[in-house]
Image (cartoon, rainbow, N blue to C red; front, side, top):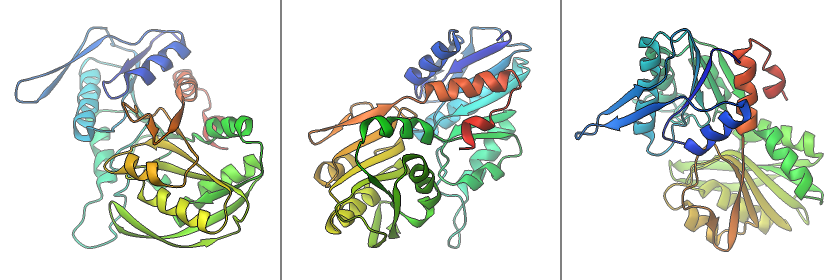
Length: 314
């Protein structure tokens, strides 16, 4: 692993530390300071000249600050003559605006891709993009990992009953189908119509959930409107229990309040975003799975120019 340097931004230091431990190394030393007017400055305390550098930074809340910090880190590495710079973004923000679905709106997923590329990144490593086509927005190599193996391994150990994998919307069917294959369960689909950025209306369910244990999987839970309405719907159709699995626990706005009153028996998330004080909803604890080994192994293989396909082609 000679020549490898892994740095962690300020968005998720715990995950960065776990990844470094998996790789058997320590994080690179860097300081992130802020001018009185809010401008950020990054100073590297380790030499990166000729090194293979990885910077771990989720673009979660505060989104704009974390994104800007990532761009400054990349520029700093480039000007310090790093041989290769890989942006490791466990949670890729601005991904929901990935197309023009009405007039006079931006495509911010493409904008962010351009910013990362122009800053000087040579490749991107991420987990469970909101839309897989975002990979095509980049003109640099993208390694798009799936958190599904981590979640499926957990569910195989903890859920003994026969399950039905429910996709909370049509766009998530492919992800639910992968889970269904590995957990040997049936699949059902929620017919959803989005009213606004924080509100969605679920209208019908395609599939049978009566007297079944429902496992509802999604890439993220933001305001939890979709998940909670979907949970109410499957309960009304006779589901015995509802467990939610989501890679990215954005959990903003009324999310915790909605989850506390929803008919959900448990929730499992990954540590791509730190939970902070949002560790439970009502009397139910949120179970957190780590993706540090998944990301650490991908970093190791990328550094050694080995295949990463087995990690994400599941």
